[in-house]
Amino acid sequence: MMNELSPAAFLIAAAVKVLAVFTALMVAIMYATWAERRLSAFIQDRLGPNRVGPFGLLQPIADGLKNIIKEETSPATASRFYFVLGPMLSIMPALVTFAVIPFAAPLPTPWGTVDMVVADLPVGVLYILAISSLGVYGIFLGGWSSNNKYALLGGLRASAQMVSYEVGLGLSLIPVMMLAGNVTLTRMVAEQQLGLWYILPLSLGFLLFLISAFAETNRLPFDMPEAESELVTGYHTEYSSMKFSMFFIAEYAHVITASALMATLFLGGWDIPFWADDNFIPHEGGLISGFTAAGEPITARLSIWTTLLTLGAFSLKTTFFVVLYIWVRWTLPRFRYDQVMHLGWKVMLPTALAYVMLVAATILVLDQLGVSGGPGFALALTGVSLVATGMFALYLDRGRVITGAAPAGRAARAAPAAHP
Image 1 (spheres, rainbow, N blue to C red):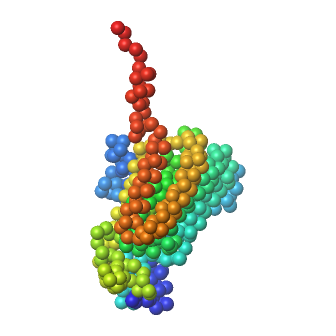
Image 2 (image 1 turned 120 degrees about the vertical axis):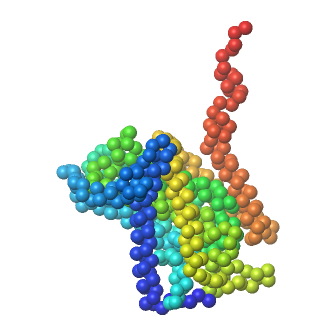
Image 3 (image 1 turned 180 degrees about the vertical axis):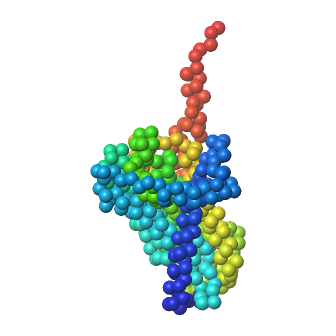
């Protein structure tokens, strides 16, 4: 059985978790900027920041101090209240969204068991979808209140883009909820510990979620709200000093939160593969690590080392997706705006709807066949999803990479006839 915390201990633990998670998130944001500059320099055969501290590790601190002491400017014709409110509304949802993501196994203490999640809400996924969608208000207010046409266009683009891909993002999560049978993130982690990580049986759902997450964070190739070659810098053109920095803090916070969410939903969260001692599954008011062959529950053994190891596993998975964000930004070119809208409404939306129906039909057929769980169920769903993922990739490719830009027949017809 779980050793429940007393009300006083629960409040103290909650306060400590809020402070620790907020501090860790801000430090992660700070060094995500350093990682992006170093990785982009590697891709472009440059050195990147290497002057302030060893390997440039103190460069984010220097940048922060620089932004704090820079002159604060405000356009004379801007709407002052909303101009200040925009960055605040942008950064707040990005920070509080992380509260429902479990980041390690429960921690045993002399006062009771502490769940390694700030707020284990029973509507975790719905909370994330609701709060993360509020970030668009800050971006749009920043663009509109600046009284600048370029900033306004950037805000309008951000609104249209985020609304478009929020639909695909939500639909891609429905298969996850169907498999888990719950919307609580801790329960989703537990279900993946009992079976396969959802990246395999829901591979197309993962791909749809990944694309939508790129669009939601306004990162290349979806950075149409900024689009330096078209809109100067888009919605934050008129901002300077820390207000300018707050938009970028919000962007990196969204990147880290989206990466942590992908690790939780599709890579088992803090689960360490091929190790059963980190399985802590809620069962009848207690925690178990699994079931015996006879179906009897096995009591889980909590330890501080297990909590630390699972925290490390979760951090590695999240870091992988953060690096993926950075790598894609410095590899792919920006889409045109019509391409972004076409992909969101004419590709992502119908594909996500069709995939939801495909997964539901597969689960129904397997249930009718008496395969409602276990390895057979997971392997069958994995096979169906891999076929759907391959068809989706072939459709998006359309003769560019997978099949080649110029098939042999077309190339032969296009080649000039040789002279005799």
